[in-house]
Amino acid sequence: MQFFVVQPVEVPATSRPPAEIAGGTESTITVDGEDWKLLDFTDSADCEVLSSGLLDVCIVPGGGGSGGGNNSRGGGGGGGGGVLVLRDLYVEAGVYPALIGAGGAGTDFGTASRGSSSSIFGIEVLGGGGGGGAGGNGGYGSTGGGAGAGTSSSYPRGLPGGILPVGSFPDLDGSPLEGLAFALGWNGGRATEGGSNAGGGGGGAGGVGGHASGYQGGDGGIGRLVNFAGVEEYFGGGGGGGSDSSSDANGGAGGLGGGGKGDTYDGSPGAMNTGGGAGGGDSNSGSSGGSGRIYVRARLA
Image 1 (cartoon, rainbow, N blue to C red):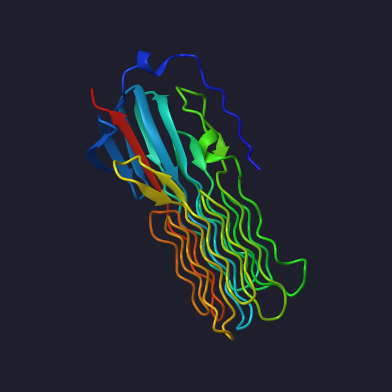
Image 2 (cartoon, rainbow, N blue to C red):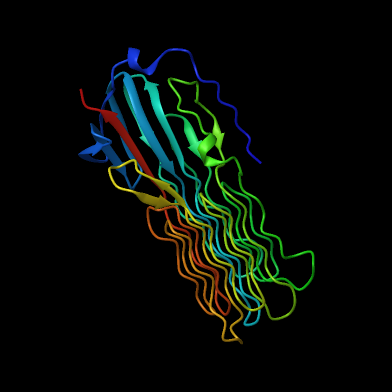
């Protein structure tokens, strides 16, 4: 389900200096014994590249909204936003907009909204897929949304997200990335069939969403673990599926990385600035996914 091709260039990263950068919330961090200047964008703003050079970027889009239910059929969890980490990009001096994707809105029926893309330096990462409301399929995005509990075999699918293994991404040096769109993540979970059932979990940036079982909503897929800002963080966790409110079952757990918990009433929203998908509900409308985030860093000479 991946749809991008990147050809690394031949110029060694060591032959180019680090970029000088400014913008967002600035700090100095140490990663693996190296000192870096870090820019943290939690809202859309300009990123200034003061002098051309190499930098790294971590892009997290918005998580998908979740589906609601109708007192007997739980909605699907929203997919977490895919997480893209690129290293040793050569960027020319200039001012570049860092656009932070909002989380997708929830829904009662049909499919909730996909999270909005995050982008910088012309690189766009798609938001997580929306979860299905009662009787609806999960939506496609960088990760798949979980399906809402259906009444027939045509409804219980959680649509796929991108499924390229995270470990296969190359380290890139000055590659021509302008205009490319990335979908990075895993499938949403299936719902259970019948009149009183549960929704599937949303796919995460690091793992698939769980399938619903009986009245129990599926767990959200795990997010992707990164150590980009000097600490280990999960981003892009899928939302848990909603459970049948007429039962004693619990909603599905949210995936690590800001995924919201599913519930028998209102599912939890995705956590802000994590790209987490929202948890599905039953008796009420679905919830909104978490907003995205962008990190940019450059080595300190």
